[in-house]
Figure 1 (cartoon, one colour):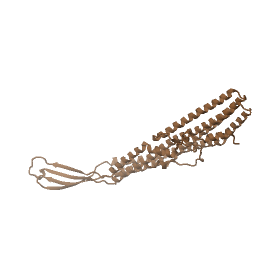
Figure 2 (cartoon, helix red, strand yellow; figure 1 turned 30 degrees about the vertical axis):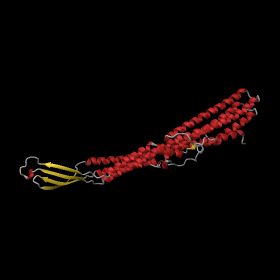
Figure 3 (cartoon, one colour; figure 1 turned 135 degrees about the vertical axis):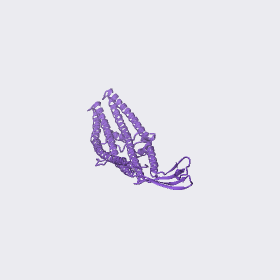
Figure 4 (tube, one colour; figure 1 turned 90 degrees about the horizontal axis):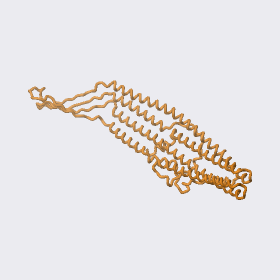
Length: 412
């Protein structure tokens, strides 16, 4: 039966929060994420790193710089012997790179740029997770405002009924005073809930240095619990970091192998002799030694590649277990919300209604009415707390599985 008490509960629960009641602009989660990413200082840091690597790539693609050497010989008094004549030699030298060193250097910088991009996406996913947690906090506060308003409405309805009984001498005066106290407590709780919502909204908008004025968060989705979580996989964005690091390690191995090739230096130039004769000199030189050092460098790069593979295996192992734990938390919280919403709340509302009717007929005391009212309020608060745990677990699961990867890649 649709009683006045049930109608009051439904109306109070459906009333919008104070922010939205003042024609505030609804703030969605995607809006909050995009605003935060646009203002995040990490974006400027990533841009600067990419610019530095772009300059490094240009430098890596340059050929070895040539050199000009000038040598003077046979200083002193001429003796008439050709070999004792003053000689001045100028040579132009150019080192010839072998083994694809230049291409390997460029490829290594390219892989560094891939690592920076992959790490930037992971950083943005961490930022998104922080925004999600703050958004859930605001939604929870908004839902508590509705519950506080519902409690106040019920308390005021019961106060009117109790005052009628006190006026007709069916109840003592202290019953009316206790009812008025319950109304006062409900009003204080509503004020505190609004203050908590405003503080949570301020923390959320601080993520993009914004103002909470004119913004509000809807709570319609807060109690919308999704279906059970199915099999999920680790975030491709997080694994992409290790893939990029592995490709970078491969490029480092290739570069060290190229550096093991010895580069000849070709030189040529004129020689001016004090007698007025001119000769042409030419030469070639190869560096000596360095083979053991080159072998050690290659071994070092190969060991780094194996370390990246080991780190990837550890990351998969850790992440899969973290995902399983987060999914379990999601399911546990979801089940609690559904149980309270579908079983506890209807019984609590029915109990309060029956106790109220019985109280009006003289079968129950005010203590019974107050207890039923408290039970309903506690059930609502417990449902909100379970819903908050559910959404917080979903945030963790979303981060582990990379749900918002596409949003993190926008404008990057």
